[in-house]
Image (cartoon, rainbow, N blue to C red):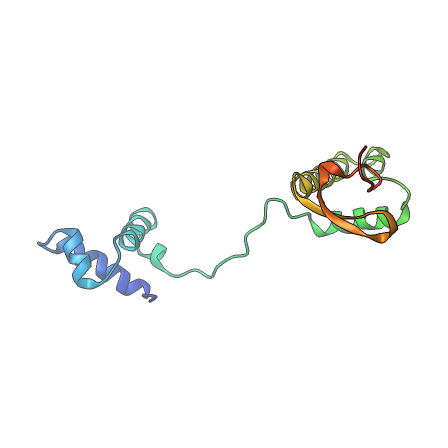
Length: 146
């Protein structure tokens, strides 16, 4: 349940003035202790105004590629389809874009390593008959290792 700032402040004052221990007062009010102490810390740090509910703000994701850079990278990759991400990155672009390509390549390699390490995959055998084998049993071209 959400409480308005005025009720939060009233609960804080009530707990402060109560002759009962904080734990028992909060039990009687039905307020969880972590919630109360979060309100109390906010009130101590920023005054009663800090108890106002704030709208959740969109958090910036640490690994999200900025839209402008993403568009540049996609356009560059479309213009040069024969080049690998590493070749595109080395091709004289800004440090920021080079780092982005290296990061993308790193993520791809990490994903590939996690996705296929020790997992069982299906590979087509001779005559189109496949079987389930470990990746270590499959050669580079998808054939059985000798």
